[in-house]
Image (cartoon, rainbow, N blue to C red; front, side):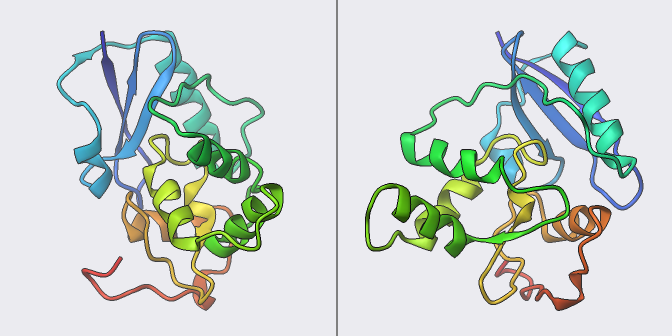
Length: 178
């Protein structure tokens, strides 16, 4: 059975919805974002322990502090490539950003290949069903573009600012291209 719970974010962010299989967090996304359509929303609303842990984590994060734990989550339908991308994203420190190309180069190096597609990495980053906790918002284009954030560019900008990143050097793509 699937469950969901809503989280009220501070001003400057869209509210969030989370989902669970009853034991693990299986989704976390901004309401009204492109990500909404990828998640099952027809499920029972229930305040589970995993939701309380996740809400506490989000409270710490949105207060500008770094949480000292990660809620237990389960990635469904994860391929080995997506898992590699998630593993790299999970190692991006709070207040830092990397590029899609950086992740592609790390995977190419690990696989002993000459190169890896940054676009393929972009697809795997965009697939991420658990935003913020798996920090896909910390991945940007090589040209300093903030394109490709399913949670909405405004939320991405606000998350980066919350983490102390100077966003003045980043390019916000025109509407329809983000």
